[in-house]
Image (cartoon, rainbow, N blue to C red; front, side, top):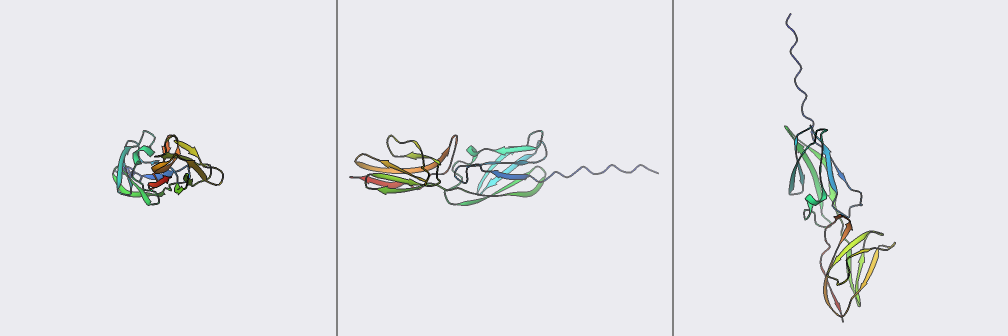
Length: 171
């Protein structure tokens, strides 16, 4: 009798994907997963696409820097990855990022958000990164003038999307 034919090669696994968010939806997360070693992995976040290659162990990741500007505060975007010869997409859930709130007050501005979080503030002279207090607020006092203030969560070196710009006038 003739020897049995060799078994067919195993099918390439679908990309495994997960969102690695250690900051509670305040800064851009890393997106990581597994695929066959050397596979090209295409990761879709909303309408943004990034491509990476699985390492010799099959691990891959796309860092937060890759997604800068892809997520607006308050929007929810699905994460999907495909790998190599297997076009079956793997869903990694979704990403939703918050931005701190800004309110104009008579002598400056008030920031509200996640208690204890660091927030980067732009448009306020002399103010950079501040920490929200235990109730999730920070109050900034400004000299007389008109300002346009924006804020985003900051977990160096990662950050989140900016809040909408808020006009602040101090008389």
